[in-house]
Length: 380
Image (cartoon, rainbow, N blue to C red; front, top):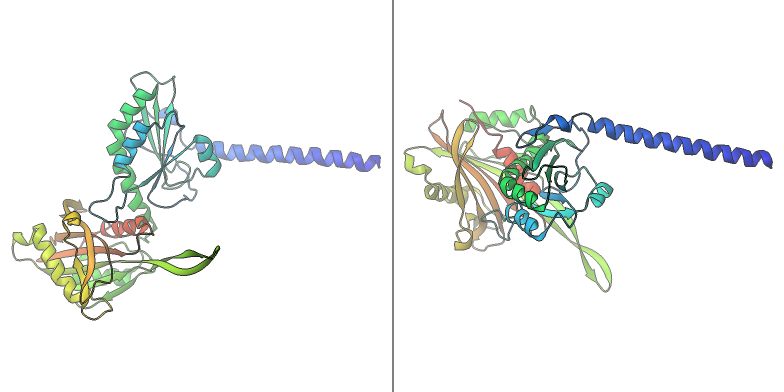
């Protein structure tokens, strides 16, 4: 009996040592990951520091996590984040925010997940010089392509001033990274058969996602159909849940071209008129007599802005579309880019569309479309 008791004690000691050693290894691994870069070597500011993590990021797209205690994430600071990051994408309806902003305490952030896509940490530290707050932006901090920003200040007033000064810049950085994550997922050397067709027909090259379907009616119009995204909706009946409905999003990118004759064609109103002409002929609904058209309600008029992608300057447009004609069964959002081809006498349009219910977030679909549009390269 004595021997058994001694063996049990010895086993417990061994397991304790192993656990301690395992814990040390885990801590060492974390330390090694953090030592890939040295924070003290960077002054901060608008330099984006490559931190080196290769772990997989987690969480849903279109979400920003602000790591801060209640004493740091005051109502005034929350309002600034909401006014910029959570501002709606014009002119989409129902309102579609650029980001959903969530606040987590440092303890909850570490306990739940540190590998989320978009993180900004607010830190009050009396060691920081008064009137000289610091901003450090890291890419690949806890996860690959993660953006993690640390805003350090001596007190809450300095922190608030720093946020006011840098919030617009931070938004641009985080917004760009959202579509770039999808761009990185698209194979750089894949889909060459379709890409060669696009090069031949339209004089463009695009970096394409996997799983799409390509259809081309003629040399004037083609479409990239992305796989539908579905999500089960549970409906409650008689105190029990019955899965009886599936929500889904359909999306893709339409491509068309037409001859360029004069500069007036590139005015936004004329681009929209030609858009409607093209879609009435090519973008037909399965219901007879129904086609895709642009929504011109005063509260949701399309928004145009000049934009340069690669070597070409054109017009980026966002708006709503609706299927119209004999009936109006559905509608959705579009995000497009129109430009005059520099080597051909044509106007080319790439128009991404998203048709889905308001119960599903379109963030992933918007960024997948932007990744395709912003990969544009023109060829002879």
